[in-house]
Amino acid sequence: MDKDALLKLKDGFIHGRHILSSWKGDDCCKWKGISCNNLTGRVTTLDLQRSYYITTQLGDSEDVFLNDKAILAWKGANREYGKILGLMTTIDLSCNHLTGEIPQSITKLVALAGLNLSTNNLTGLIPANIGHMELLESLDLSRNHLYGRMPSSFSNLSFLSYMNLSFNNLSGKIPLSSQIQSFDASTFVGNSGLCGPPLINHCPGDMISPVGRPDKHDTIEDEDKLMTFGFFVSLGLGFCVGFWGVCGTLVIKTSWRYAYFQFCNNMNDWMHVTLAVFLARMKRRFRVQD
Image (cartoon, rainbow, N blue to C red):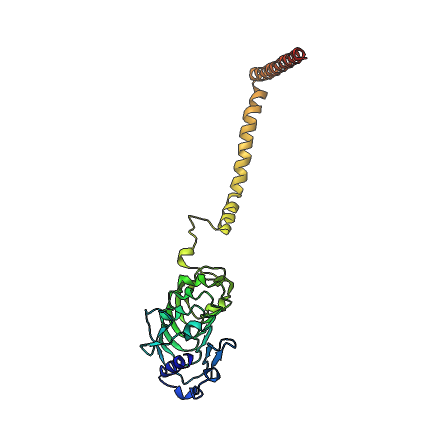
């Protein structure tokens, strides 16, 4: 079954089929670029990197996996590959001459742990459902001509330990997830339209409005502007007017001075009497209770 599927895949190449001259015989596990599981004998890895003469066009297909068969669009036509693609864990077609768009149907390879399509001539958008490949640990789509936004489903790739999307024409905000933000800026270099963490350039919607939240530096400058010479002059004048407006009047106006001190004496006597009465009542109450 795997042998027939691989031969159909080989037929999909426009040029470079002679590079795969080893793809003959009954044991496909011995073919160039093919690795198999030692226990099951099923194909798990397709590694055709740097087979520079391999050229094909990846088409787009909305077909899904039905029963035990997989349909993937290659060379503008739907080709059936049986169970082989569903069991694939690694696909490496880097450094070739692949053209066209990455097919949406490739996201049905849910067992895939590594996908490398770098250094080709791929165009179009990154498949929106790329997050369906939740077991993906390595993704390299660098050095192509992909454009548009990064799908939000990228946040579902929680096992992703290596990613390279550099040197494409991607734009928009980088999806937020602990995994995506753990990569450094070199992962996205060469995509001038991308913004957001881990890149230093902010997206337009992330810019803080000066009215909504003033900058800390601006706040410090405003505080410095308050502590001017005029501020201290006003403080001194206020103290002089307030203090001497009251105390000066008492010094100059004898009748007001007598009235003020008489008021203070009366308040003192009232507080003393009130406190004495309160204490007498408390003592009387405690005696009654005893």
